[in-house]
Length: 543
Image 1 (cartoon, rainbow, N blue to C red):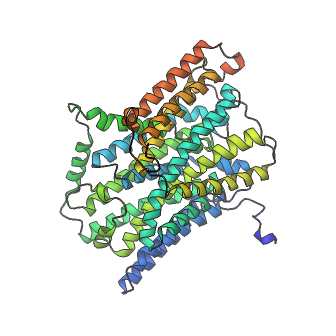
Image 2 (cartoon, rainbow, N blue to C red):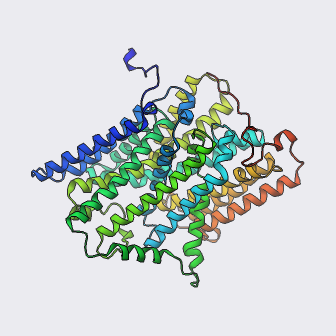
Image 3 (cartoon, rainbow, N blue to C red):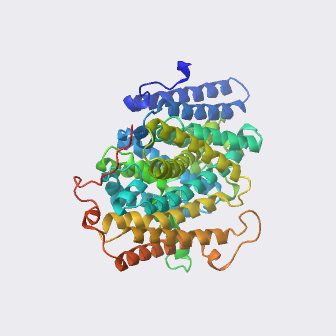
């Protein structure tokens, strides 16, 4: 039946990205207005939040379908035609998802904790923009594994990176499912198990049609929906005069003042600096963001993507704080309640606007879940299958394998959620720690130090990633139930990340100096942000 087959030509947003995105958001806002009108007419207010959430999920899926792809360059790189501003929207949605997972797990006891993490993530994005992304994009690689294999030579460095990328992304995917599933079950009154697989189904279906194309454009829509979810209810509260007696300028000043660490305190380093460094180094090496960077249209586009992401992220944090201050009379952060305690929203806002806020929360969570799923899939389908097992396979088979891997990874993560006894915020922290200790050194040193060799890079990945992974496993010695461990298990994710990164750098440099120097044709590749004409040759993919 020909009508069941995908279209022969590319469809969707690439030909009209702004118009397509605005049309989708316009339709969503019409649904929101419709439920608001029904609420004013006396229709059951409990219907509005569920209807708004359903409309948001429908928008995600439609955006993914509009970005359908048939070629590998589209599936993995969105054909490198995505404007930097839109790519930045997608990366900023990932930042929103990272912050939301931490919020859901009660990781931020105060505004200061939230702002320290947000500043750390933004710094990581800037590190990616300035130090890593231009060099990676200039290499014209499909993935960071492609770059490492071309820079250092050999198969093992690619496989080592694939292991790091998969573990980090898979942990974030599990954290997404752990947070989103109970929230979704509570909001729609669904059985928790059914809600888990419903959330997993939406996550995989939003990536399946177009890979990176679907991911990028769906995340752009999600970011805009998150902004609406912060600003529209905030505007409503201000307009109706029900925001409490808080002076917003004074309250924002108090929040920012409290966010500054007390450097005279003995706990200042552990309380502010270490979480900041964890967020910065982890974000800079996240496989999710390296994939977004490599999809940029040019070297400058890769830099601008992360720059736009920082700007959009700052706007998002400010909008979220504004809404939080308006919803609370004192501005105190009640982290213990988490995201499941949403009754206060319904008491403060009209039902339709409360549904909009919850739709924004879900948009942030799905943004990080989709990005994590895509990165975990690429670690298997591209790094292992395409470049190791089926190196001469046709394009159609490669995309089919990638889509099958998407489904398998999602099912595996959903099956692990009920039995993995780790809090989502802990999964987030350790994912950032593993990314920093396993991924930063080989990329950074490979770009900026000509003397680095493959054995050094592999040893550095194994040492840094192995140390942090061991600390994670020991801390969660009750991984499937049981008592916690001690000793190295007590150092925590921030300290493990810094120590693991230092070990990785030291081992990479030390082994590279001990071993014979690389061949001249490999040494010249490590020129940082040098001439764009000196590109790393990446093997052409078969059609």
